[in-house]
Image 1: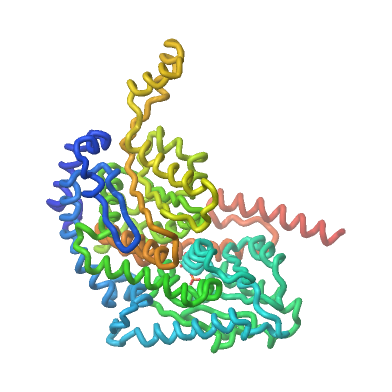
Image 2: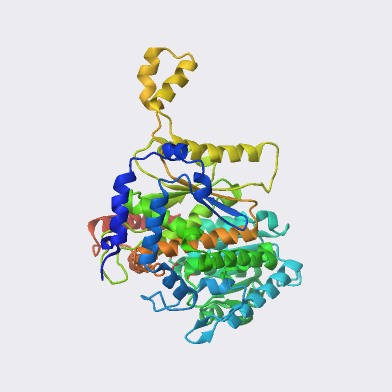
Length: 556
Ligand code: F6P
């Protein structure tokens, strides 16, 4: 089969790129008063302004042609109807079924999954209401005040960003913590803030075998038992979210307190499943369901809107435009909202674990760039850290700016300042500053000619740096659900264009195997020589310090 880069659609884009690559957005705006209207799209209370991109109407129409060439609509329909598009694991990809608010049947191997989905939602509703109302009590009758989610990757990042972003909707008196890292510090420091009587651990792991999660879960269990001394009490303080009920039961968790999900839900797409239990506990089931509603609304838009007006499709195509034609290596995410501080972390896994691939669906090595490096930070903090590189560095970095029109905390001038900074950045990145403008500005400030000559080159900004602005009225659970689903579909569309399977993660699995081998080599004193010299050297260095220390402590 032909590579996408050999298609007439791709070659046309390549030709078009050569024609417009030197055009400046400043001139594009000057020549067209309707640019904002032409290049913006709306869904509910979300507006995507993509006019500050290096595009013309022709660019968009050629990109849409590319989407049609890769049969994006057919792939989308296949995904949403349960076809096993995760071919390397022979699985369906049905996170959209988890938020299918229409309840229309969706089948996997002929079986409608909606009754199972609804049953788990009922289970989550029932349990979260019991905990939140105080009906569910700890082993000694105390009310639950702390929820500790133990999980990693998709079993951490999704619920974490939602709980953090939705703080205004949380029940006061209920605290939530997330423990993910294998570094004991994460657990130890968290446990310092809680007592066992009022703490509920949610062990979230699709497989219930992930090393970090199981390590933390067993250490938490030990901490609990050391303080409480009663095995029976575990079932009041530990619940599981997993596809592996058997292992959860072996851990000591009552099957009735195990919340199921299924292998057709990828880890990084799992927050909509029972992995959202921590969200339901912290925010209440009604807010978790609003999150699902928002995602469903985006799913319907993705399914029904023409490609030309389809927000995730547009965002995906713009990403391909920069990634493959401008050779942009990364894509930045700038939420101008403190509540969304963790969004870049969540999107890193969603995008990079999905599209960080080199082998295509035909088992061939690709000859083009696939997924970008995703990074970012909340504004305005990022402005005082890395924005300099965006403005005057040598690397092109397309970026998404996200901002609410209304703040959840309307305090004095804060939101006006935040909002103006957000727009000032995208404007400056687009416009830049010409040599003549910089000179005039310095002259107006009364700067002498010699100083101007000495520094003027540094005061010029090329501009022409592309950004999307995603503005929404207020950060509600529904809006957040839509935004997260928007990015999921964006990543999906890009994966289809690059002809890769966005739903496996073999690279991560390889690291896990090597970690197991090295762990064995650390057990006994004495040098190892079975690895490369760097790995041997580092293992032996740690061993000499560790075993010396052990011997000394024994002597003390
Ligand atoms: O990082 C690899 C990965 O498999 C992710 O895809 C997943 O979200 C994470 O590990 C955690 O896996 P589990 O939920 O099975 O513990």
